[in-house]
Amino acid sequence: MSVDLAPAQSEPPAPSPSVLPERTLTPAELRAVVAELADRPQEWIHRVRLSADERWYERLRLSEDHEVWLISWLPGQSTGFHDHGGSRGAFTVALGELEELSLGGPEGELHTRRLSAGTVRAFGPEFLHDVRNTAAGPAVTIHAYSPPLGEMALYELRASGLRRTAVEGPEQW
Ligand SMILES: [Fe+2]
Image (cartoon, rainbow, N blue to C red; front, side, top):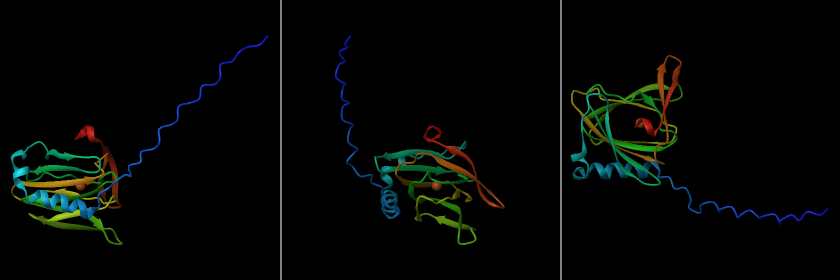
């Protein structure tokens, strides 16, 4: 007995990979983004809120290659040590004053920086820091990340160094 087999269906051609190169802004470009926005308070000042529960934040811009956040800080509010999930970033203190802790140097020493209004900080994908408002009044900051943040890990500073304790995704923001 013979069985007629239908000719094998050929698979449709796989879609060609996107021809768009993945574009990532450099820390210097992100620095320019936040500095330029800080100079145009009419675009964001009316959005600022203060929250006693936690830092208040709102995303001002989201595109394929970067995002921009506006954050307010009451005295005592802080991030704890965190990374940026491999994104590059920059932020500026638009109003008020903050303090930033980071580890650096061959010995991994703890550095403390006062960030007065107008200060801009930019960083690469491996950077970790803890930002806090130790001043007497509120502060407002503008942040840019590229690519847009995926997830961020939180760390605890121990005698042996930083220990990863949790991971946050966009659903927590
Ligand atoms: Fe950060």
